[in-house]
Image 1 (cartoon, rainbow, N blue to C red):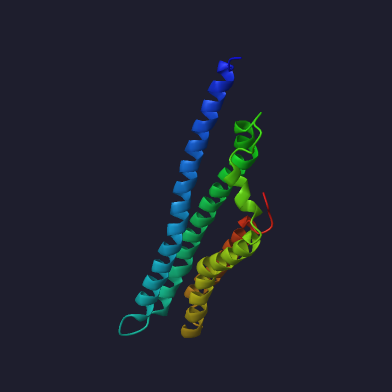
Image 2: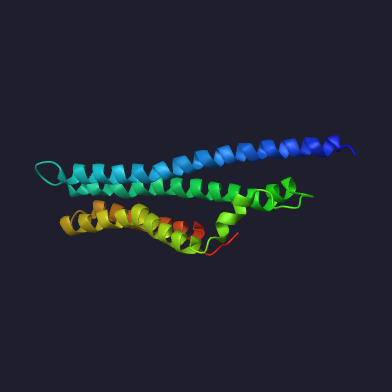
Length: 183
């Protein structure tokens, strides 16, 4: 009994798609994880700029919320793509690759989601992401407000807009976290 050339070609295409998607996923994971370090470096740089000289410059703290917004948003977008690729591999490509087989194809793609402590880790990651990308912005704004005269109305207006942006980012981070999904 010979194998159908059409199904063999389909399997080759599916395997090539898997390899391409895994490479993209790994690249996005690297970018996503490096955004954490970039945000930490930006926080340190803004704090040094604000308080590293002879006299404090609290207005420089207003640089941190847009930087955290940009890096946090990029983190969320990359994380969404990493998750979307994983869902596609589990739900579409894995079953196609394993069609007619006695075993589950791409087992690791589904097995790691069955880990009993996964939800706890995802909640902890959500806390870290909210603290890093949103908490650092709100903290910088709090210090700015405590050190700035109320007459600096333009800077205060900017700080209120930045607060709103930090809240919106927090909502998006929470919404996109995988703390309630299993597969």
